[in-house]
Every structure is written in C-alpha cells, then in structure tokens.
Image (cartoon, rainbow, N blue to C red):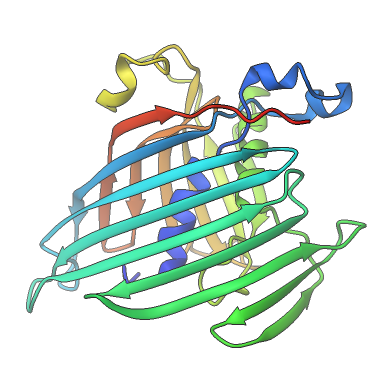
Length: 285
C-alpha cells in the first residue's frame, strides 16, 4: 500500500494508541459507568520509525520517520487525539519522497459520535484533506457520515462500527477476559472519509519479558500488564479474504502501545517508542 495514503497511517496509530482515563477516575464515576470503563491513561508519545523489512522491486530501499501522538480529554467531555507521522522513503529508483500525515479527532466519551480532520502532504504538497463527522443512531444500529471535505457528502449506513478509542477500550477488555480474538467493524474517518473496515485482532497471552521499547523499561509503565496483538484490516463484508494490511504492537492495559510494526505489504516499518509523557487527568464533573 502506498505510504502517501492516509487510510493506513491514521488507523495504524489511532488504533494502537487511543487513551482515556486513569484508574483513580473510576472512583468518581457512577457505579454502572465505573464497571464498564477500561482504565486508560492520557499520554503523549514519540515513536522513531525505521525500515524493518522490504520485499519486491517496488519496495523502498531505506526508510525513516517519526510519529508524534497526543491524547487528552475524559469520558465526560470526550477524547481529543492529535497525531502526526512524517516518513521519508528512498525508492529503488528515483528521488527520496517525504510523506507528512496530520490528524485531529474528537470522540464522544461513550463512542456515539466522532469528528475527524485529516491532511496528507507529499513532498510538501497537500494531496488529501478529509473533514467530517459521524453520528450513531440512538438504537446503535446505524450511523450517518457528514463530510465537508473532500466534497460535501452525506452517507447513511446500516451499521454501527466502533470509533478508535472505543475500539481500544473493548480490545483491552477482551484481553483482560482472556479472549484470544476480537472482531469488530471500525470507522476512523480515513481513506475517503466514508470507509468502514472489518477487523480481526489476535491477542497473545500477557507478556512476561522486559518491554522491547527502552522508554518503557524503567518508567511507571514497566509493571503494567501488556499483550502482544496483531490487528488485520479487511474490506467491509469480506472478513474471509486476504487482509488489506496488518498491524502488530504491544498493547498495555492502560492504553499505551509499544513495539509498533506497521505492515504496508511490500515493506514493514518498525516503530519503537523513544519518549513517553503521562498527562494529568481531567476529572469528570
């Protein structure tokens, strides 16, 4: 898959790095809400990218880059995610290309509505802008998508996919319950701003070895439970076909992710975490 498309890049990181509330906040929630909440931590993280594997004549011979991610908010006010990925690729022939993908999203605390703004630049020129909202029906059986860009469009779908933070929240809940797989439809505003994906996540047993990411070995994260996971993305309605792409990472119980691997098909980018800042929690009122 071309690295200039935002569909994989935005999903790759929003899926593996969505975050929400600290455990202490659960004490302030109503009993029913507290039972449903998964204790995720607001954080800011940086990942350095390098070429992990390259196959075929169309694959790059060298790659480097960086992901910067920031998550704030609460279950009461909603969650704001800002993300930027810059990647420099050297093809087997021709000049080096620089891709710069930026996104800002807001997700309602219970995963009922979603706002997204995504822009991709290649070699400094804007190639894609997506701006829109998605709203689920009250019965949670349908969803409407309203786009401002790339052109005004409204689409109603007979499905209620998970938005990114809710996807991660439910994935962690499945891991905590000892499940080995998790299936869900997902919408994150990427691709054309209208695309829904079927996903299958394979969850390994909780890891016991030291974290692969140096930034996570000697921090407050070193004793947090984590599961290696592999998330495959399929065309909607075709979960038995070959996946469009596959993500793998260590998913921590508090929502932080490490040891990223972004598989674009003919090449893989490795993304170890190089910096982590745990952010203050905004209490619900």
